[in-house]
Every structure is written in C-alpha cells, then in structure tokens.
Length: 216
Image 1 (tube, rainbow, N blue to C red):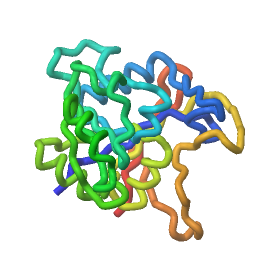
Image 2: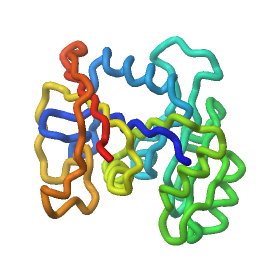
Image 3: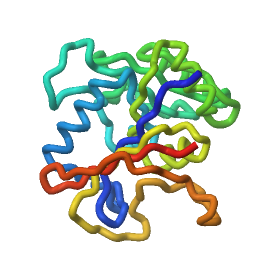
C-alpha cells in the first residue's frame, strides 16, 4: 500500500518550472492560494533535495486560514543526507521525514535525526516505492508531490503518481538549461510516453489550471 499521490506544479507555456538561474516565481496570487489549499488537504508534501537546496522552502500552509495541525508532514527525498540542519524544512512548524539511502554518511544521518524522522529506503539511492510504503505505514494516505523535475520524472516513471495538476502561466522563458516540469533520463519512444486523461481545466486569474489522472 502507498499514499494517493498528486503531482502539482506551476510552469510557463514552454514547460519551464524555473529559469536557468533558478528563478521560479511563476504562479499568480490565485494559484498560490490554490496550492496552499491543496497542501491543507494532504497528509504530506514531498520534494527532492535539489528543491530544498535551491529554495530553502518551508513547505507549510500559510496563504490560507489554517490551524496548527493543518500543516502536512514534510518529506524530503535525500539519498545522501545533504539537507542542511539549519534549513527551514527542519524547523518546528511541522514534522519532517527525510528519506535516505544506506550509503548516506552516518554522521549526517545522526545530525538529521535530531530534527526529523529519517527513513532508510534503498541502497545507493532512495527506493521511492519502499519510501511510499513506509509513509503509508505512518498514516499518510494523500501525498502532494512538489518535485522538482528529476523527482517528478522518477515518480512518474515508476508509476507512483495518480494525478497531475499543473498551473500554466502566460509567459515564456526558454533556455536549454532551464528546468522543465519533468527532466531525468526521459523516454525514447513517443509510443512509450506516460499517458494522462484530462479531468478538468479552468482559468484562475491569468493562469490556466489543468488536472489529469495518470492512466495505469
């Protein structure tokens, strides 16, 4: 058993979630409110270590009304235990789970255990299926995946995403080194692409929101 997973992201019309320099201010105010409402509905938010290092995010509910218990569990996929102990994802606003591999340095793991629950899943890299099973065992039934692009690809490739919700902003940035919604190794043949089914679409301020289910 694993949690129900919703991949949520904001991207430009040309599919970028950040510029080559890391700038990622894409969503309008209305979409940011939607994101925080979704956070409030979920039991956990998952991001990769690259997102943590780039943005130092809080990963809490703070743009809509929320009680202290409304903050979801924060989950960081961090194979080598690189999460800096002073970063905001380890503050006391919400509980945090760090998923590491068996090759994570013991001293880093010990430091993280002072501030978060550390789950060892996988040998050289985090085994995402195993991590999700462990999270489900902790009572997490609905998980919001906030990427970034490498983790998005890995989760989709392994069939661990149930829904995709994307805010498409009316802007274009280009850049061969700018991150897209999904990076990673990619799929060679279009016939093997991950297939989606449109649930609904609607405008929100200047943005377009599209919601899909992932076909089995």
